[in-house]
Length: 211
Image 1 (tube, rainbow, N blue to C red):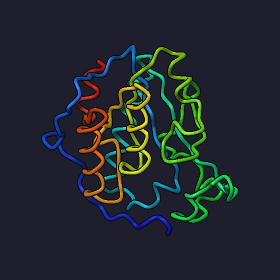
Image 2: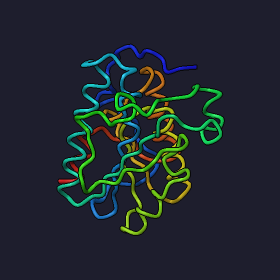
Image 3: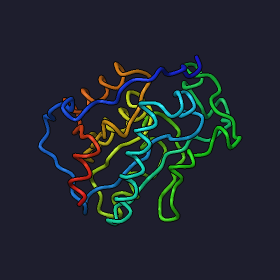
Image 4: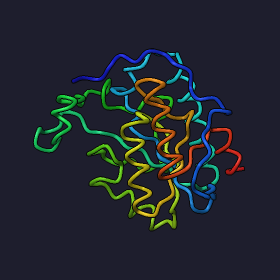
């Protein structure tokens, strides 16, 4: 199975953000921001210059810029191209060989390129915590909250949020700074996080905590 061609859909509106069961609120001195899998290979599945990906990228840009200005660590996950079949594991059975190492696949989209102060982690499985030092890097900086942006909401973003919760790291899924295969998949991820493992916030709500 290869990536689908994703049809345009509208991002969740402000009034569609579900109420969280948990009591958590973002705190500047506890937060880290994750830009998840925003590589050309994954982004190219979307119709360019259309919702959800175009406005989601704009929201990610603002969040990353504001986070850097407030001294909040910004992390990126990036898969490597031309993965060895043994390293790719069961993902190969579901998604095939994945991306190549060519820049048109592997590079982060240019408008979201990591800054020199950001951390770029090699992505191995759906969750950004698997076989990475994300947890260690966060703990060393006194960070136990993670704001998650990127693609795809119901796959890597959701699995990262669920694992963060299980590591006692509070996940915040940014509803309009993520994108997915469809609005149905997107809503499922947002609802699950809000009900079971974290807080769903739109970018406007999230940025208000960073001011």
